[in-house]
Image 1 (cartoon, rainbow, N blue to C red):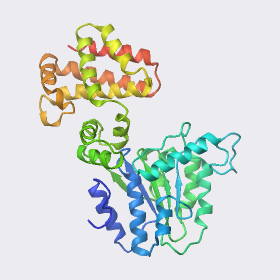
Image 2: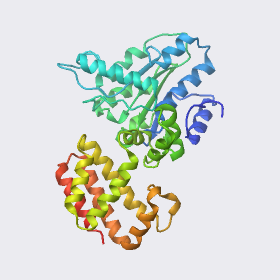
Image 3: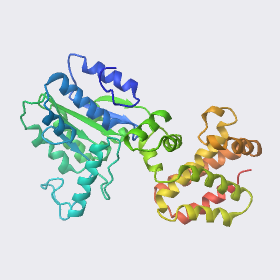
Image 4: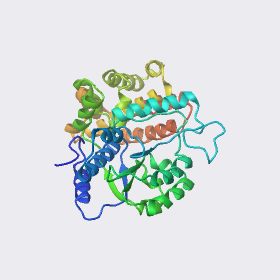
Length: 366
């Protein structure tokens, strides 16, 4: 397929975009939505390169500036923390502390080098209206060395209603040669007036092989580890990259040990296992552990009918024994209860209470 050669997976997305590019009229706004961490940003940059290469003769200097997300070629908007004494007339970066600004530059550099990298800046919980208002100046730039310039809004759902309404003014009728790309995994949080002005492109979860390929190529992960992690990634590079923080093989064994201890009444041993695992970074690690326990129980249900779709592939014999011993209804009930606990953890429920609830629910399986 000519175009998007470096994009892993997303065959349907490639076909849709190539069809749009080949049409007589190019839309001035796109909404890339779907699972977090499946290549939406990478696709945006591929689209930018393809459109400008097709319509312009780019020199190396201009290509480099585009690849480095430099204005006035690309306006890249991301969530940012509020600066000290910041007001609506300040630029989005102007009042950030020196430490936060340096972190912003470091994170942006990581994103430029690896399009699948997820920028993480503490306190960056929304897209400032200041950032949206800066688009007006960007649209006023006049350049002749590229056919198209782009405004990319990452995590577009983090715009407030006020910011979204401010964006509408620019989104409705941008000057010729400007294209908006909004990226989100929560399109339902965007105003209908925003969505109706965009061509919507849905991105699907990636296959395990596609996840492993990206981990090997972009994150420099050894193939065996990449495939192990991919199996638990739910089709998302974002989830896979978070799992790289732990020893996935050791974590699988830990889940089996916790279950055995809970079901044999050795509650203190189960508690010791859990506390030993989460000693460094409690919140993130308990989330990982909860996900793995839920996946294990789901595998118990799968192995009854779909033995080729397991995640805990190296523990199939143990899964078989578990499925034979415990009823479907009891496992389903535990899954439902654990999913509630997982959601509570995401809402910052007291972790000690959550851990005790995990042990209680696992021990109730019959």
